[in-house]
Length: 268
Figure 1 (cartoon, rainbow, N blue to C red):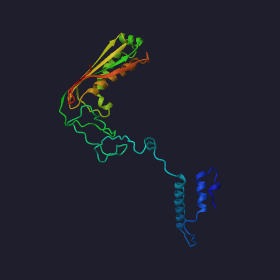
Figure 2 (figure 1 turned 45 degrees about the vertical axis):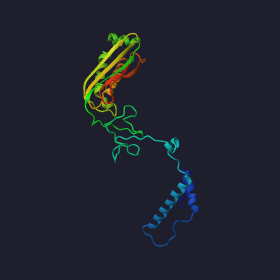
Figure 3 (figure 1 turned 120 degrees about the vertical axis):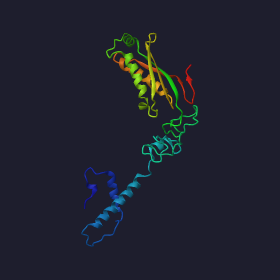
Figure 4 (figure 1 turned 90 degrees about the vertical axis):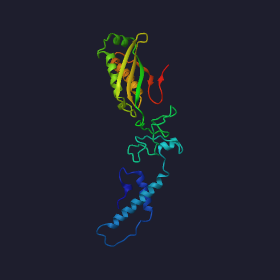
């Protein structure tokens, strides 16, 4: 009779289970009647499989909870991410949970809570369909600290890649038009005007970038202005990285915004 304990490179757990099965009573009585199709053998093998599964579950002991439950605990909140929290059937939800309340564009809070994230951490695009179209203007800025060597080459337009200031200016304009494709929950805005200005600061060996965006619509253009300034700064880094890697990008901030229900903002 075949014995799994005599196999070469045999699994150790299966050996123990097989020995336990040998000590257990047979699942069905021995029947000597004629069985040309081997039905009883199949039943016997199925019974042995059931015994193996039962013994395997017993040997494993209590189930270990998932890693998130072990770390967070049974009462800890878990974040959920959903593209459409108001949909009944949503295959894009990574973790199921209760539905998020619908966001209405009527009386929006000033700044008490995030409009793109609910209390359970699920993200959703804000509905701006009911908001009136108003004139929107936003201005943002950024700074690139080039260092003395790279700054002199940019100032004299002697970089091998070409005019860094012109390329960065065009990149800022292009980035403003592509903001909704870069920022997941940002609305697509029909911009009426984009202006990117770069100024050289010789005292700090830096380039100061200022981007302004303008549109008429139901949502603001702050993200367009910020994205424009940031991408212009990144483009400057790309143009100058062959000369120096000690280039610092920073001070990206919103200078002002006008229009919309939340009022105007001007940085002092």
